[in-house]
Image (cartoon, rainbow, N blue to C red):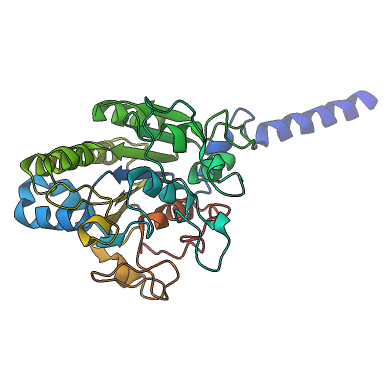
Length: 360
């Protein structure tokens, strides 16, 4: 009798084990079934000015077919805004990943800002600091990489050398990243390569839930030759081809097809002929595109029309963060990434913290 009872208990236990989820399944794969979007790719186009892109789309349509496809099949505006305080590369990309303005706001704590005002070159800095050292309270500044990684998903950064080493790679790597349920290193896949093909190849191979892909061609050409030069136009054309290569991956690879959203934005434009991008009052500098394309995104939609209740097209103006009618900013994109993935906003973020930027 005891043997029969023992055998029955053993059988029930075996059935329970067989019916349970596989223990080898990673947290990311467990969660993916519940994620709204399996993959989000954010593209940062350095010096990708919105006024210039609009001009090139009209004058050179055959060379900008991939930008046009993103616009025609997605939700977009070419009249978004940079950070209000600064129109420099690293500070604006820091706005994108932290959801914070560059500085504190009037009447509010200075800790709201990320305070990364540098454009540090990897090869020239002798005393490197992380982003967490820059704010007045020396507090840890969470990023989109933190939220995605700590939720058990994977992240990837595919960049060109010297641009993101300190404010991203170092700050959210194994040394300075905050201890979490999946470790301190918030960036699972990372490559700093001058070749766009290398960046795209690792992006496809890694299959990260969140990927940040960076192109620097337009910035180099704008600084060296000017923003109305043939070289700047040619650089923008190359970026269009890179986007085409990415779309081939998304269109044909079963892992990415119908499972991906692409978010493209600029960090600044440029002041012609070749006066750089430090003039925060120049529309050609502070006007940038924000384009969203892919799964569950409205097709051929204007982002301002979709967000009448929370954003207003600023025309040529440069609204401050405290103004009643806020434009769409590149800083909106970090929390947009998280809302698409079904994740909460970046802790401590200010821009799009309500995750109310709609794409459909």
